[in-house]
Length: 190
Image (spheres, rainbow, N blue to C red):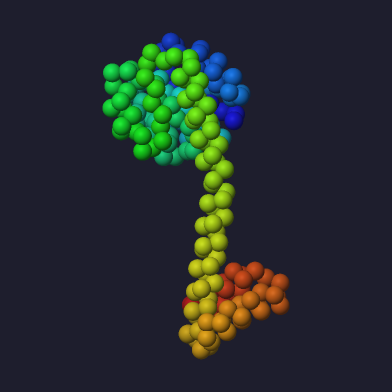
């Protein structure tokens, strides 16, 4: 955990929020005074690990900002809003994984929400490479299956013969099965 953004037009909770973020290991903490400034900061590289939005902001309420950041980054998001509307806001943003904390904010509650948002982000980041690997394998199988179908159609191979052909070509030519399948497709699917 490295980068956090605090979005707030008022300085009432900024010091406490900054202290709690630093206690949780956040080194780089950036402040934004408006939604537009926060969007610019949040949607650049490196993306933030956590964003704390103290509503309302001068150019918008902050709910739309939270949803935009949730849709475009893996950042943990905490939305601070007045207690009388916090339940309604929580209902509208809960599907986006945004934590809503009612104001006035207790130090313990905010600390717990920061830890939870950081843990959620860590878990999401941990799942991403695994998901990407699974998607890559699925795509590889699709290419190989299309190549088998082409061999069966044009060379009248059976499915086991097509499978064996791709395997044997991969071993003999020191290529992956996907590379062999792509060559087969380039030859027969023009």
